[in-house]
Length: 137
Image 1 (cartoon, rainbow, N blue to C red):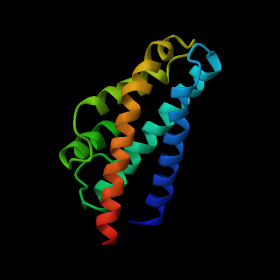
Image 2 (image 1 turned 180 degrees about the horizontal axis):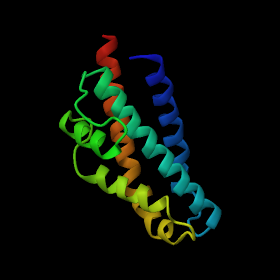
Image 3 (image 1 turned 180 degrees about the vertical axis):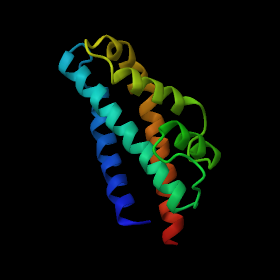
């Protein structure tokens, strides 16, 4: 894989690590809530861009709109990089959070992020690691 992918994937792993700290934090603190919201959005955006890099660079799939997270997620599902509709739900949440000006949406979403979506991010990381291992063998 090319250098751009490696940098982006490293950023994804770092962002995921920072987001995982939300499990240990006080979710009644507004600063923690806003940080969790921001880290979730950043981690999600890096994830779909890593998926795009893998689809185009590893699988040579190019028949999709590369700038559309929804299109990338559909192709990633078809390529078995992700396994169910949860990523579409995550996209919807990311879109809602980008308009959460008073913090009401994140209050209702934090449990879902920390208990479900973090696991999805880690599963995707395991998938990428397996691809990278196969490529280096």
